[in-house]
Amino acid sequence: MNIDIHHQGGEARLVLKGRFDFSCRHVFKQACDDAITKPEVSALLVDLSDLEYLDSAALGMLLLLSDKSKAAGKLVSLAARPGIVSDVLHVARFDKLFTLRAMP
Image 1 (cartoon, rainbow, N blue to C red):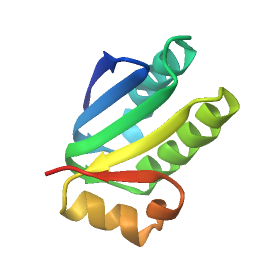
Image 2 (cartoon, helix red, strand yellow; image 1 turned 90 degrees about the horizontal axis):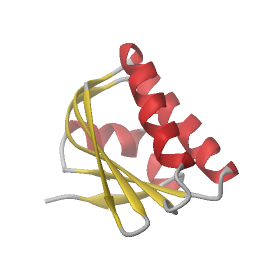
Image 3 (cartoon, rainbow, N blue to C red; image 1 turned 135 degrees about the vertical axis):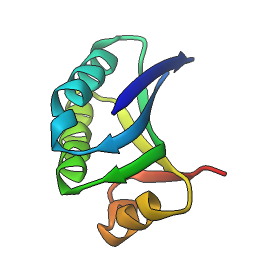
Image 4 (cartoon, one colour; image 1 turned 60 degrees about the horizontal axis):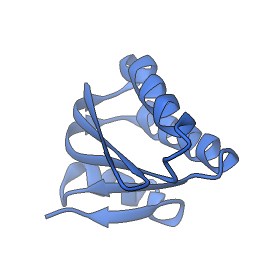
């Protein structure tokens, strides 16, 4: 998985590409920690639009990010295109835990 980080205003947008699974835990954690610790960042958008796959470990990492960002006073939202990734988020009821942004 590749992660590109873009900053605009007070939002850090983490664009994930490829497969998001347990093997990505260190890269994902480092990218999130870098974004959360920046004082100018008030919100994080995790953009899952370019993912081919995510598993239960990825869902767990998103939950950990939510907890860590709340403790730091930062908001987290997710973005996904219609398809398998969006379907997994809805089946896992992440639409109740996060703000989900639909991407075209």
